[in-house]
Each structure stands twice: as structure tokens, then as C-alpha cells.
Length: 557
Length: 68
Image (cartoon, rainbow over all chains, first blue to last red; front, side, top):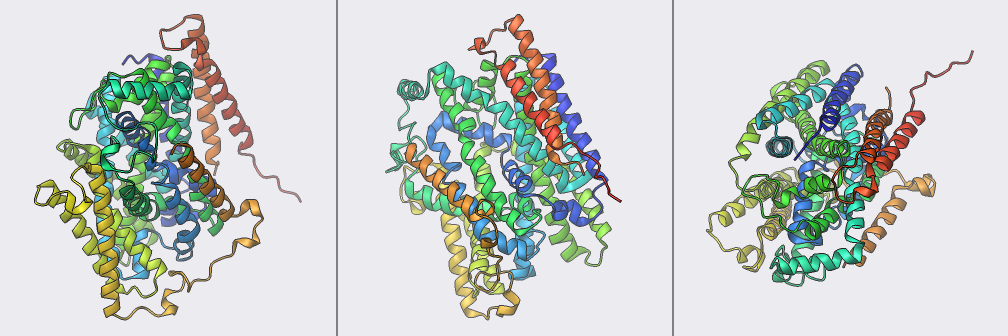
């Protein structure tokens, strides 16, 4: 791919710009609260956009546009049923407890609701997951930049990792949030033009549908590529090998609710909101933008099928410019002149870096508050914890570089990510949900439920991986894809958490209502929305978001 | 603290200006891209430039005046 000097200048300016912002914000970061929670002073728009941007990494953009090329519009499920209901549930029903409890982190909430052991288990599993996920982003970025720009892989990894380490160490979550919002705008500016020009090239939506259907038949692929739900009656009717029940229970319920309501990487941004109304509004605002992302990710994948029919599946663990993974960069190259091309590449770089920064800032918080402060050094001053936050930001980046090279040993990056989510996120969702909405859950019920869920998810993964059991035992069919297995594994792990937590809790004595005040539904007094005008009520906007979500699913049914 | 929207404005303005100018250059010296007749760089750069200036003006850090 030819990159001109003007494109290189745009890319280099971005690096200088984000480092300058980090340097500027450093003087405002004086306490632990400033570093780890951005002073809890963010508006609903700042929290909402950074909440979304932390998830909107370039791995996600490249990965899902490639999936749309490979499987069709069905990939949009990850943006609609796989996100919107969960984001609205977080905003309306869960934020009051996270906000009222004044917790610093999700493991911190588990300490308040259950006990220290549950917090520690969750903090350790979260730390491992975040560093591995950060390494994956770093590895993918190194590959993409090395392929697109022709730069050395190691140079790409070190340049991006060094920049992230410096600007997060300067001002912690504040600089991560600032850069996430800048990245959010960059991604829209860099990617929105692709579907606009693409639709003009193919002659409109109806022509695109005809061309995609024709190309899919030419490529010898089976399944419906242009409908969301009508091809999900059986595993063999769609190219992804999914069934609607697996999508609803696995993706729509466990994986989606688990990720959006308990993954501290995204929840940390909402905890930084300045008041309860802002905290509730943030995920609701984000839900509207999340619904729109398929137009810059899934639609280019479909346009790619129509105009770039020659792409092939990627070699394992690799990125090449003739594979599905390259559909977005190839469309940039097809439509963008120098200047615009630099903007597009910068948007991808910004996406990778914000993904890393999000993971690193969340890791620094959980390590400092939930492991270092709670076990290793209980009597430290706020300043000492602030210093620890800065040190482990740099250490986190160094460890992530190590995991980036570790990922090179694995066959498929996306399978690896999905496996991580089902190990750690699905069980955690069961534990948090029961803790917030059932006052009968006991301290040790939460701990043993979480442990059993995590262990069972890992065990199911290993049993399937080494063919010790057949896939149909978990997903009821031998036609199910690896993705379908991930969803069903997450569902069963969640069920095990619920069963174990309930059984162990029934054998013990729950905390008193007084101890559970501010933590559990039905005991906690929550601020009523009726004191706000209609247009400022989170519930009002959540209802509009839900209606828009239903309309999109009906239109593309 | 200067609001984040001001920084967004600076970035959009600078990038918008660069893309707009490069769009005009490629209008005069056409480059071989698909549907190049749209000259996306010109109108997209202009749109970014206007949006960036709006963010800058709206969020320009002004010192608060005190009244005696």
C-alpha cells in the first residue's frame, strides 16, 4: 500500500498531539481519585463517548468488517442484540448501585457486596484478562501497520506501546478518556466516508443486495448474507453456523450483559461520571452511537463482497492485504486519495492505542486498589497509591508487550478473545447480577459461584479443544461453529454460577438489610427521575433507544 | 482544565485543513482512485474544518470575569 509524505505527517502529528495532551493533563492529576477515576467529574457525554470508545478499538473494526465479508449482515448481531439491551440495562438498573456504593472498581463492588476473597478472585482474573487483551491489541496493531506502512513489526509495537505508557502514566484515566474521545471522532471521520462512497459506487442499497447475493453464489458460499434473523432457524442456514436460541441466550444475554455491565474496562468510564443522572445517561447516549457503528463496519464488509470479491481467509494469526481482515484498509485505498488515506490509517492507529490505553488504565486501577492496597500495602498514603498507579501503568505496558509476542503462538486472535470473555466475563455477570438483585446471596455463595463458573468455563473449553467430549453435548448439534460453542459455553458457565451461588447461599446466613443498603435492589433508596424535565430523564432516552433497536431488527429481519 | 471538546476542535480543524488543501491539489492533479470524480477530500475536509472551528469557538477557554 502506497503511503505518501502527507499521510505520514498526519500519522506523526497524531502521536505528538496525544503526548502533548497527556503532558498538559499531568498538572491536574494530584490524587488517586484524579488518576484512577478522572476526579469523578465527567459529564454524561464525556463518560458516554469514552465508554463506547474504550470498546471501539481497531481490532473490533477490522475484525467485524472481515466477519461481515465472511458471514454477511448477521455480524451486526454483535452491535445490536449483543450490545443495546445490555447497555440500557446498565444505565437504568445497575448504575444506581455502582454509583451509590462509591466503589472504585467492579472487584471493589464485590468486596462491598460479598467479601475480600471474591474481590481478590475477580481482581486477579480481570488483571490476567486485561493484560492478555492489551497484548492482543498491540500484536494486531503491529501486524496491520507493518503490512500497510511497510514498517518493522517491532518498531510499530514499541512506538505505540511507548506512547500509550507515557500518556496514561501522565494523567491516568483522564488522559485515557481524553484520547478515547479524540479517537472516537477520528474513527467516524476516517471510516464514515467508506460506506458513503461505496454505496455511490454500487448504485444504492438494492443494487448492493443483488450484487452480494450474486457474488456469494459465485464464491460457492451457502447461507443468507443480507438478513439478520430469517436465516437463523437452524445452524446450517447461515454461514456463521449459529442458531437464534444461541444468539439470544449466549450473546444477547450472558456475553453481552456480562461484557457491558461488569467488564471494568468499560464500566470504569461510567464510574467517572459526576452524578447519578450523568452515570445513568452515559450508557444510554453510547447506545445510540453503538447502533450506528454497523454502518461503518458491517456495511463496508458487504460493499467489500460486491467490489472486492477476490479476498481469501487469513492465514492463521496473520494479516495480509489479500485476506478478509484487510477489507477496510483495502476500501480506504480504493476510495481515498493521499491525505484522506492518512486520516483513515490514523483512525485505525488511534483505535488500537485507545484499546490498549483502556486496558492499561483499568489494570492500573484494579491492581492498585484491589490487590496492592487490599493485600500488599494496606497503610499507604494516597500519594503512594498514585505513584503505584503510574509504576504499574508502565509495567502493564511492558507485560502487554510480552503477551503480544505470546499471542503470535496462537492460531486465531478472535477465537482467543472470545475464549477469554467466556472464561472471565460470563461467570462474573452471574455473581454481580445475583449480588445486586437478590438479597439472599451470601458472602461465600458469591465466591464459590464465581470460582465454579470460571473453572467450568475453562474446563469446557479444554474438553472441546482436545476432543474429549463432542460439541453436541454443549450446543445440541454437531453443525455448530466455534463461535456458537463460545456462546453456549458462556451460557452454561453462567447457569453454573447461578446454581452454585443459590445452593451455597441457602446453606449460609445472608448479610443484614442494613449492611446491604446501597448495594442491593429493594433495599437501596434510588433517586427518582421524576424531578428532571422529560428530555433530561435517562429512562425517556432509553425507551427511544430501545424502539430504534427494535426498528433496526425488523427492517433487516 | 480546558474541555476535551476544545482539543477535538483543534484536531478536526488541522486535519480538515490539510485534507481540504490536499483535496484541491488532487482536483487539479487527478489521482487514480475509484469514483475519484466525487473529490471527497474537498467536501469532507471542509466539513471537518467547519466542525473543528465550531468546537473551538464553542469551547474556547475564556477566563471568568469577576465583578466587584
